[in-house]
Structures are given as C-alpha cells and as structure tokens.
Amino acid sequence: MKPQECVDVLTNAWDTRLVNENNKRGSWTPKNVYASRVSDCIWQMVLDMVKSDSKPPFGAMSLNRMLFGREVEDFFLRELARAGKEFTPSFELVNQQERVVIKDRKGRVIITGKKDVAVRFEGMKATPPAEVKFGQAVSRIEHADDFKGGRWTKHMPRQLLSYMYAKNEPLGFMFLPKIGGFLPIPFLLEDHLEEMELALANATAAMDLKEEIEANGGTLSTIEPNQIPYCADRTYCPPCDYFNTLCFPPMDYGEGADVLGEEVSDALEIMHINKAARKAYNHAEKVYKSKVKGIPLAMAGRFLVTGKWAKGWENCQEKSHKTRLEQGSWRTKWECVEEPETEESAT
Ligand code: SF4
Image 1 (tube, rainbow, N blue to C red):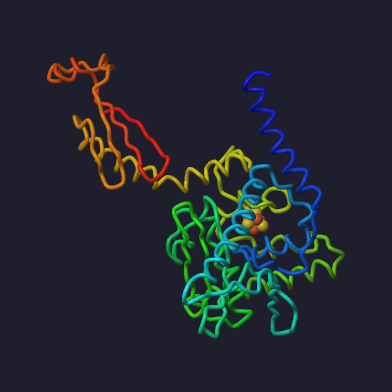
Image 2 (image 1 turned 30 degrees about the vertical axis):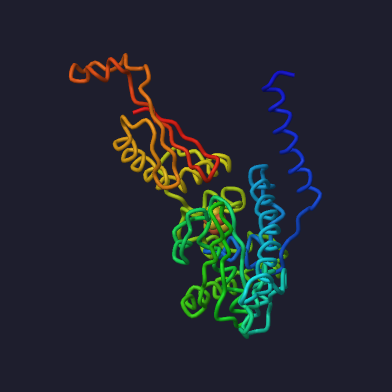
C-alpha cells in the first residue's frame, strides 16, 4: 500500500469502529429533561423528549470527542482520588454517577441527571458536587463567568447547578483537567439563583408542552406554529440537531444562504475558540522576533533560543538592507526545555 492508502486505512478503521460501537448502544427517548441538555431553547428540550429518535446520528468527529471526554474523565477522577488520599487535609471522591432528580411543584419529575462525582473534604460537612469537562470548548475557560461567553459552554454550569440545587449544596465545582494542569472552578449556588430559576421554569414549560403533545398522539402538528417557543437567540439554531429537519424557526439570513453541516461548524468552532489565541500568538511572536535578531544562543525563562543567518534574501530589494542582503535572513528557533515542543521562524 502507498503511504496515503495506509493513512486512509488507519483513519477509516478508527472512524468506522466509533460509529459501529455507537450504533450498538442504540438510542432512547428521555422522559424528562436531562440536566446535560437544559437548554436556552424550550422547544429543543421538548423535541428531545418526543422526537429524539429523529435526530441525525452522531458523526465520527463528535463520537471521537465524546470518547476522549469519557476516557479523560475516568483517568482524571482515578488519579484525583489517589491524590486526595495521599494529601493532608485529605479528600475523597464520592457518589460517582449518583442519579439526581428535580421535581416541580406538582411533584412531577422535570430534570434528571447523573453527577460525575462529589467531594468529601476532611473536616467539612458538605459534599460539593463536581462536573468534569475536557476539550477544546473549555480550553480557554479560567473563571465561572467565562462559561457564559461560548455557544458550547454556556449551558454547562446549568448541569452542575441542577445537581447543587437538587441536593441543596451551596458549593459545587467544575473540574477542568487541562494539558497544563488541573483547574477546579468553584460555583456558589447563591450567585446563580436567577439562572437556575430560569432553567427550572424552561424545563417546566418543556414538560407541559411534551405532555400536551403526548396527549394528542405524539404529533407535533397539534402545536400551533405561533405557540412554538423557538429559541430567542437564533444564532443557537444552525448547530442544533433539529434545525431544518424538525424545527424551522423563522430566520433572517438574507437571500440564498446555504446551511452547512457539522464538519464546517466544528471547524469554525475551533477557529472561533482559537481566534484570540492566534492574535496573542502573533503579537508575542512579533515581540520575540524583534528581540532575538542577531543573538545566536540565549535562554529566556524555560526557553532555549538559537539563531543564525540563512540564505533566502533574494526578495529583499531595499538598498538600506545591504548587510542583511549579504548575510541572508535571521532564522531563529525556540524550544521549551521542559516540554517537547519546537517552533521555527525566520525574521
Ligand atoms: S432549531 Fe432553534 S428554535 Fe429549533 S429547537 Fe433548535 S435551537 Fe430551538
């Protein structure tokens, strides 16, 4: 086989296995709102409960992301539990995957979920719940407020807040295991009561509509179009599983706009998440290049910097750069001496 054929075999085998394993698991329809799906859109929560079998199956990219998320979570919680035993004051991880239920005033179950874990600190009565989140979406999150800024992170705290509310725990944590270290972000329920109340009201409204649809034989057509509680923020819609399949919210795109699929929206998400990082990188690179020109060997913190004149000056036409023209351009290389990471650039 040619190298590219080998590459195709490897990647196709991986993707096919992910899809097949997922197909084996099958699908099911939730009876109430899942804590992980408490949404800004009431109609989305309704569709989850009455039409989730009509959702398009997950693509290989999404399944890959989920697999990594699960594996990292297992590994991380195992290691954190060990760390807790060895440290003073000690802590234990308890109630892993405990089922949590929230009922409304009528005693009807409206939200259920399984919390990742809770923490029992030595000498502390409360056992704050914690949710583990890993991946690109949370890579730039550093504070509780940062979750609000992203399409994919906005809803995450609601899951944790639901568990805190259900168990009357005033404190909870988002656990973010990152490549650079472990970041636990504390959440106080009292700081998020308004958001929690809105989540409960939306979940209750979704349950009411679900029951109405079921009472009418399960067909969506029993709900008048003007009764459908579409999401107020329509930027939420294009990546939604139901968009233009089961749900057709009035959108104002202008004429002739195409609707692109998950692959493009995933790519754009990555670009969006890394946009600020790229800007910061470019700025830092400018500073770095302006300071290291002509320096053959240097240390800067934990970085080793090397440089040399190299050919490649033929495009430079300016007379004032005579010396540079003779010597070529300055090529620098930096290397983090604590991490296996290398970048090369030419000034
Ligand atoms: S497409 Fe928009 S309005 Fe429809 S369910 Fe999804 S988020 Fe809600």
